[in-house]
Amino acid sequence: MPYSHVPQLAVPEASTGADAGAVDIRLIVTDMDGTLLDDDKRVPEGLWDTLAALRERGVLFSPASGRQYATLAAEFAEVAAGMVFIAENGTYVVRDGRELSSDPLAPGVTARVVDAVRRLAAGGTDLGAVVCGKRSAYVERTDEAFLAEVRRYYLRCETVEDLTAVDEDVIKVALFDFGSAAETTAPALAPFADTHQVVVSGEHWVDVMNRTANKGAALRRLQAELGITPAQTMVFGDYLNDLEMLDAADWSFAMSNAHPEVVRRARHLAPSNNDNGVLRTIARLLDL
Image 1: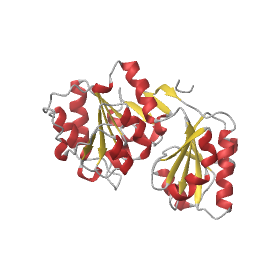
Image 2: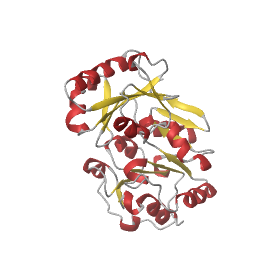
Image 3: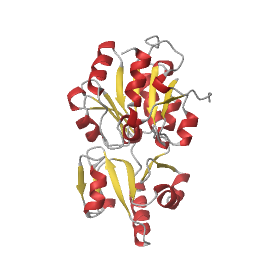
Image 4: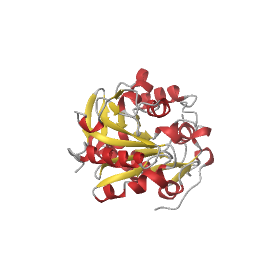
């Protein structure tokens, strides 16, 4: 079912001008890669203690990522009870194993995208497609170099002979380009942009989703369901697939390592992902 600027403020040590502990935050949403995780894909030191402290205060912590739900759930397995996972760039939102919302592609769209990828590959572009279902991800390219990149984000992944024959709801088609996704794959998929979103979600990744699907749409639905306002929401992001999510929170933070457009769009700037920027900002503003 489809989903029916203010001046920049640099915040070394997350100094936003607000008194520590005086901010009424009920929901914290963070991107994973390039935001919460460091460049080696490691969770920051102190994360589990921070999550425990937030839970005691009744603050909901929600990972929002292009990653698969199964991957996110495994990462946070020990603390997943009650946590909301905004997975697959907002196309699939789950809490305690129950789907809260999803935004699957219409029948036939997957086949068209896969055919476009095959034509690109035949023309010499080194790329592959990942068809993302709710239950599993699917690939037809089988070389180890490609599969190693896919496994970073898709814990459940099956190899099939024909991606156009996948028989489950498809919520996203993700494309991995060994070169520059922004320079090669995204422009080649421009015809889909008339009817769908073609989002560069990383240096090597492009996602094709419904026009109605993004992290921000998922977040606004979650806020409405929980009765939480943008003023009570804190969001962290670093890349273009985080833009709409930043718009849904008064306390929106771009990481100092973020894409320039993300820095322009966010209200505040946090330390980088390699400097534990998310947790440092939370600790300063909520006096943890």
